[in-house]
Image (spheres, rainbow, N blue to C red):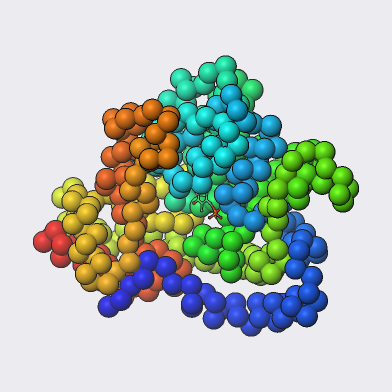
Length: 372
Ligand SMILES: *Cc1c(COP(=O)(O)O)cnc(C)c1O
């Protein structure tokens, strides 16, 4: 049986009757840039995330860049994050000219280790970017305590975590900024690239809004240098429509995770130490990915691919060891938990339309590989 890592076609069928007339309406209006569809989307996403303001962006990567720009972060400044994240987190810090200071991850959650955070603060530190990896929020108590003590901005990289909660509070509502991505593989994806920054503070929201459109306020009067970081009306309309379905899809992902728990328990894979399942340590894990640790991970990966089961390694090379960041001067061994995660982790299909039969085939194929 073929099991893709992600299949968005059944989801499209579900929303097609709602989406297609709105797409046509926008095409007929020929009003594509910003405007009421984007405003509607911003208000809806901000409300969903428990934030006072939302500003639509061209992508999650650009959301991170603009949040850093809004804080005036640049050359000579340091920003703390983890080396075990998607490239864009650290790419954004480099793009504004600042230096990334890495803190290793907690091996249970794959998120920044709160206990190691404060030791990374220097007089040059300006911000912390906690990444809510795989759909589970980072230790926001530790992050906010260190930020408050040292006067640092907090930019949540919530690109994989829309609707995730830390002690009942949503991703993007706790830090100064929440950065979201509507890339199609995220839990709330559009039909191309898109993103958003959420904030509680009105002055910050205004600054982000101006930076998004070439630092222009009013039209053709530029007080600072921004860029074209705009979300367009077609993408915004898709996000607004899909948002109404998001809680149902999240529930399906959570049920799929629970089902994997049951199916693995029917094997000896976990107790035999072949496989370690992800730990849900926070009040709402939204499972953008279901990532296991596996003995002989690369062997298992090849086996699953031979069985036409979609898997992926998120991420095979921690960022401190990437070629483009060699100027930071890190060597292998610098962040052992991130390096170990990069060698052991493997994502299994978890998307909402995954069937019980598919999940059984996935777990059965893993059991077959280990002979148990
Ligand atoms: C997807 C993602 C991004 C970037 O979002 P894009 O919309 O693809 O630019 C940033 N950080 C993390 C953790 C992501 O998963």
